Amino acid sequence: MPSDSSYAFLKQLLGTPGPSGFERAPARVWRDEARKFAEVHGDVMGNSFAVVEGGGGPTVLLAGHVDEIGVIVTWVDDQGYVYFGPIGGWDPQVLVGQRVRLAGKDGDVIGVVGKKPIHLMKPEEREKASKITDLWIDVGATSKAEALGRVQVGDCGVIDAPMHELPNGRIVSRAIDDRVGAYVVLEAARRYAENPGAARVVAVATTQEEIGWRGGGAIAGAVHVNPVMAVAVDVTFATDHPGVEKKEHGEAALGGGPVLTRGSIISPVAFGLLRDAAERLKVPYTVHAAGRESFTDADSMHNAREGIATALLSIPNRYMHSPNEMVALADLDRAADVLAEACRAVTAETDFTDR
Image (cartoon, rainbow, N blue to C red; front, top):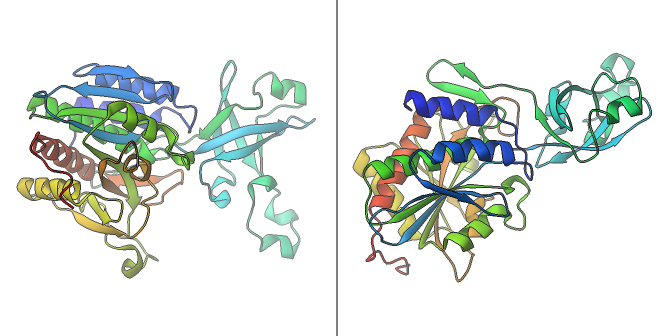
């Protein structure tokens, strides 16, 4: 389990709003923690870097994205109702009736996502799934002028859902995807710093992954760091709840340890380093097969520069892209140990061309 200080950092990171493109606040939390043991800097993409020099050997990049999905204000009508678009991939049904926290010009503004009540719908309307264009945010204003005095077009927001602790070492939060990845890479760098190997390790809290069809902050970060190996740390769909076909989606259970991906974009050498580290530490893990892209930062990093040997380590996550994503703390702890151990195995003699 995480130490008390690391757990306090995790809770602060999960509680700090920061959708894609608006990551400044959680990035600041991450950098403040990183300064306790690493050399820290940032870039124009909003990426945050924590450098542990190690023994002067080759550079390894550990990347977890610090952004989350959210909403953005697009228009305010004459009655003061606020209309919005998505930041990242939403199931609109999740948004109905939620309380949201908008980053207004003078501070946070609380609002409620509104929709026509079911009692007022015609029978054919009741059977239709809601679209984001059917929804609005009610901030309690009585006019357009009043609403615009508090929020403006282009302001972002998140669902107003704090982290909660559940039994058996499980937590729920709206920002699990992927603040836990940003947490794990920094925790791995911390543990590596306590017992470093030859490699220079750079943990990166990347930006814009949820909207990163162009590569987001990860590709800029990978080019900047210039590593011989990169590991993306993200969440993956847990398959230990009702309604999921394991024959289609594989095995990933809360408490079952990290999930290591094998597939066409994954370096077999980098995968082997993670697998061997888990086995040396006797950490349970499962393997996920990806025949094409992984839909994570790994996709852009492996193709940066002339190519980077890339691996993907994932944390099983229930209820993805909802106000109550769920993970097991033990999986975060084990993932950090595996990453730190794998980094210790990278030396100048490690041959990543051995495919």
